[in-house]
Image (cartoon, rainbow, N blue to C red; front, top):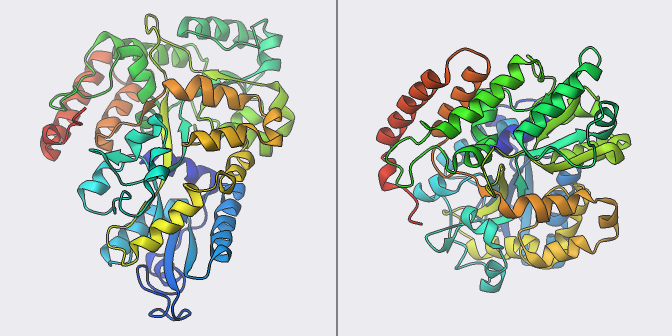
Length: 454
């Protein structure tokens, strides 16, 4: 899924490595083999665990949880491999093609394609039922298919959150304690803020390119139109309506009025432009607050956070989508029980194993188990993170899951938004082009036979 992959690339991209070099350095043993067969200690089962390179505190947690598990018993040894985010797809595909995929690995976005391809082991047979039952309802759509669990989520993340600089809003006479509730409110705020800004400063930094629109705007599409890009039966595009046109025109206004920069000052997924106080409003995912806390700590007390503005007449429809990050077990592993035991212990067992993850990431991610939510809320540090309650209890509960239809569908919609915003096409022409592209995907991939049953 482009959401987390793109985000992690921006936050923590490392130098590119060749696939051959990376595969040679995957750690001792071969995924799925016992350590006695792969040069390890006889009688000890070795499993391979791969995860992407994340932020430093997340990387430390991953390293620590593996070490803690290995020290907790002497029958299973987990070999931890951190993979550069920008090399993840290439390395994983190469490993799967060679029959050497890791036993356990992290997974972003929809699991539908992976399940269809037979790449994921079911968890019902290797993870305790009470652990699976703890997964909250909001996380079930990204972890189970037709009643069978194939992934255990570590977290959920609202992908579209509005941040604002209270000082810049105060200077313009705009309410800095409460964010704009509607797009009309946002436009009115920008009209007041713009004259007070200096050179190189802008009212807002939203999504700006086709790929970012593709994944970040799904909730907004639902907010404006009441649905997303396909009909419920996945037989036809569903963007030729007034809701999509109205959303396109709002972004065109931001562009035409100069409320947003013509060239991005920072990626959607990072907070550099906000941290350097170049924008009054910033649109990003909930994770951005952890960047503010670590890199721009002086702005923590000056940063407002809230739900993204609603379209007129949207009622209670959400304007954000829930991103997610999960752990999965490879379908071809020779040690499924050991893999399930590690996964269960690390993220589906004692809440205290994962509390540090949510605390150290500045309370910007949503735990998928109520017991973990409670433990995180009771931590000593929680009192210094008032935004946590907004993310967990105000934004996330109404957010919609990421779409399970192919990425090409989302990209066609994102391309339409970018072209209209920048004046390259009218809304009618952009929608016509997107419709044709989406229909091609529907026909090519036989989506009518893959539509969700519910």
